[in-house]
Image (cartoon, rainbow, N blue to C red; front, side, top):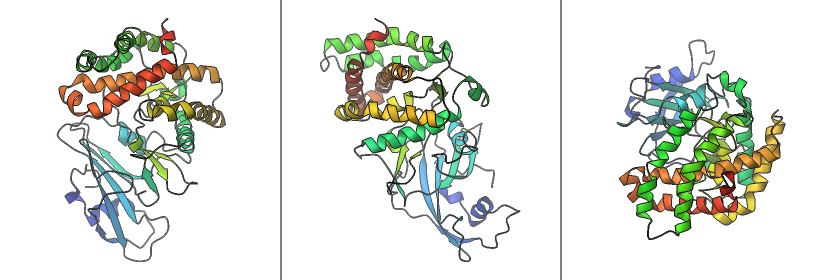
Length: 365
């Protein structure tokens, strides 16, 4: 069972827990003698979503435990009928950054992925006592800078063509960019129809121009490899765990790209994703430059050279436009267009304002 994908919490047994925590060569005499899975919610993660469900496993040992042994574990199960994701999240926890010191990723005790069914589980440290997610929490400059520092550490680890090749990854080709944009473009006409009485005509022109001109600018940018890395791709507030103690580490969780997502791209795109369509516009305007500066400084401290501040700003301007794709993609399905309008319309409004703030039309003027 140790190599089996857990698809339901009913499959969790004492034998399985002990086999995960203590291998055959372990010299520790203690073992887990009992466990419990409380039904209460968690401080930093919802009990589930359309794509996964979670459980906290509280552990009781036979004897006094060492500090190195966890008192509880967090189990994430992705085993629904519609398994949308590949093995990226499993690799995120157990492969990609395993040799990176002080990585801003929860410790993982086990992860299993089934190639045939695309089901998987991840058993990791439980951070609910020390951290919270940022859902419904107003961001601060300190929070943004902490995320920038964590991102710079991850991005520097796979910065540039040579390091990406160690993962058999590469800077995306034109066809990959076109596939990524095409998924969002499916929602353009339905979005315009939905909003025909709610938006200014100038916004309609922006949306049409973005899909006509921006993809080529993305392709043009790939000629220069500087700035490209393995990205997270979905730094929404729920995927960022902030410490309850101000001096603690900020963790980044849940890397789950779709098959059409860009998994390698400009590192600064992760910051644009976090800030542009999730933060209120006045906070973005006030803090995005200091946060970008923190990111640039952190890249340098992590050994990155040859990536100028001017280039970073140009790249951020290019990536600001991608927030429009995020909003438009929701409208690719009738269900998303109707039931998620409360979210994507806010994202669109913030993205269009950022588009004008950053004069993104200059990219193809």
